[in-house]
Structure formats: structure tokens, C-alpha cells
Length: 237
Image (cartoon, rainbow, N blue to C red; front, side):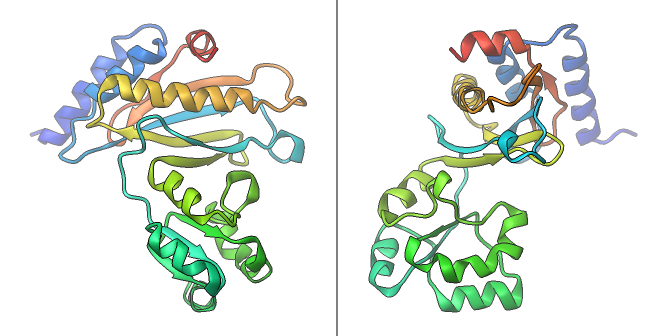
């Protein structure tokens, strides 16, 4: 006998398969919400395949954006700063604040129970030693993403309010959560549109040919829903 979960997933697949052609961004966001039928608040994820070769430095696509409706999840922030800036970070709501003790814990225990690391420029010489551990996980502080800064209060507030970082992987794919199934469909659409606008804006000048090769959206436990590239380009203007 099929389980309830299996039946739900099969029904979701049948609804998506019934669509012969890729959907508009707005319709796809609404369908992704409808196919989220698990017993928890599923993430809604946007997956892009880009026409870039990240092995070339001038074709790396990475950036950050504050989603209009946030991410729907609690973000754990670690701030690495000298003593003079630690009180500011604590008052701004950082979850972990310190320097040497956290650097040591990451190095010796591979501790990574956080989502974002913010560091002040004056301690980056010490933080740089963590590159081997934080780098592959996309957690290394970076000035371009606003996570190396002296303005800790603003940086923490942005991240807690829904700022996300994104980066294309070595195969040219980009995977990012843009909200939760509990969001209104219009909020999911607006978050997805904002992210896509930023990814399009960041198109490397050296990337020839088709840039947005494929776009899909899905709930954590749901099937992928194809999105029409032309609709995205129209709505991203």
C-alpha cells in the first residue's frame, strides 16, 4: 500500500507533468507552493544553470541580495572581531561574538554551527587561516558580499532581515532558497524575481552565448517546475 507521503509526491508530480510547457515565473512560484505538501514548512528553492565557466575567474557569478520578504528562517551569525567591536555585535543581535576562541574552535573541532560569518577588516589576517574550512562551505567572510566590514550593526541587521549570499558552483549551477511554503505565492514570486534580476545584472562580460540556460523552482519535497526563460527576462527588467 502506498504511503500518504508517497501519494502526495505522486500527485504533485502529476500536477507538474500536466504542464506541457515551462511556466511564467509567477505561475511557477504559485505551483511550487501548492506542491509543498510535507508535514513541515518546506523551503522553496530556485535552481539555475548558467552559461558560464567558473573555472575562469572572470566568469564567476557571486553576490548577495536582501530578499523583499526575507527567507523565512532564522539565520545564525558568527562575528569575529577585536574586543573594541564585540559589544556592538552583541547589541546588534549576533549569535556568537569573539575572536581567538572561535578561530581555535573552528580549527580544532571543525565547528561550523552557523550560517554566516562576519569579520572586521583588522582581524582578517587571523581569520584567513580558516579559509580551508570555511571556504568550501561558502562561509568565508568577503568584502564583496558585505561580510568584511566595520559597520557590524548594519551587516547583522541585513542578514537577519533576509540578506542571502549566492555563488555559482564549479558546474555552472546556482541553488538558492527564496522562501518558505508558508509564504504567500506573490511573496515567493517577488523574492524569486529580485534574485533573478541580480543574477542577470551580474552576467560576466566574458560569458558568451545563452546565459540563463535553465530555471526551475521546487519545494524541498516537491518536483522541479520549469520556468520560461523569456518570461524571466521580461519580468527582470
